[in-house]
Image (cartoon, rainbow, N blue to C red; front, side):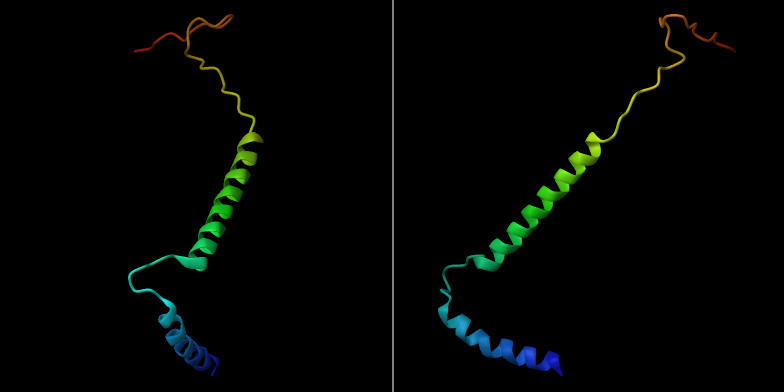
Amino acid sequence: MPDMSAHLALTQLVPFAAEELDKNKVTPGVLGFVVFAVLALAVWALMKSMNRHMNSISFEETPDPAAPGQAGEKAPAASK
């Protein structure tokens, strides 16, 4: 059972780590920095990808046919 051996290995490592910790000081440590760095890189990659996709869109708004004052076009008459 690989799950049991992993559990036993973790329980043997906990006392060594607990002796080194200062009970009055709590820090995120290396794992916290690694997680934060990975999240920061993921957000940067997503923003870069979104920017690339947004720049590839060519959007031209169609003119409103009901807007008066356009050259060569008449506004439709209102019907009741």
